[in-house]
Image 1: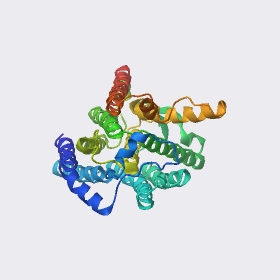
Image 2: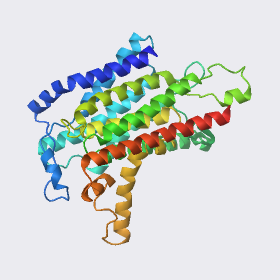
Image 3: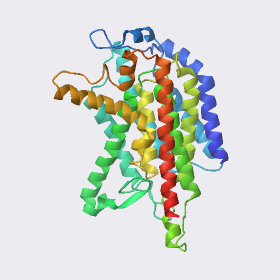
Image 4: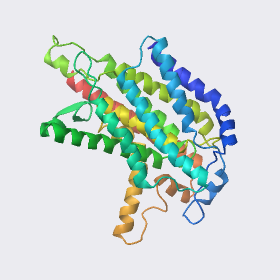
Length: 370
């Protein structure tokens, strides 16, 4: 517990107190926000945000790493392969976002990496993650991830390896890539207003920290002597406490960052930040064996990406008509006259309700097994 609390506290202090230092550097380097160019459809009120320091995601990425390592070692819980995998996803997908941001800042246009190049970059991060996740078993043979599709835990009937080793690996890596690409891009779409993505990320990642900690409390390593009913309630997560530590560190870093990112933002996270948040959430869902539960826990981001998909489908089906004034949904609400702070706070409420609902269903499933 000391490791968990220390990690969260150090990360929070890092981003809360050191962000002004980073902002001075960002201004010196010319890392200012680029708003959509006039030829694109945009909300004119956003033009006032032009020049605000961006790529702030690098701050909470650094804060998470520092807090996690300090918390892990001071609490005598050294990092495990699962914790390193979460950091890999955070840094790797954050790097893809950083390249996208840097291209925008350098050219002073809102065009960075093309969609397909961004996806290729994400897959280059996700495939190694997936390969490593099915290796490095502990003394009980548990690997960080599993070749099963999971909801609250692995579903035995949904094994990729049932189709053979080669086909199973291919399908498993495709599955991991779909989760990672969908999650990181959904968070990216949800990052359109001051504090929206960061505040929502606190609820979502916090929920996964609680799930991992609960799995740690209910772990039954070497519990072959337990009854079948008792074993059914156990969780086979390889390093649940370490996952709780790294996600708690990330939550602390986001809380400190939100102090400066809340409306009116002094710094934007940029794609480097939104992609990093998506990477941590995707990694936690895969490594805690709760992949499909992700849809509910991270539902606020599903709403953002879902509204974009619905907008495009409706536009094609009706040959030019629009379902929303602008997508994602939060921009539609802006165009309807809602104030930015009203939208952000209500989205935080929705994020909290969905995350808590996910935890609730997770707990009810555990009760059904006991």
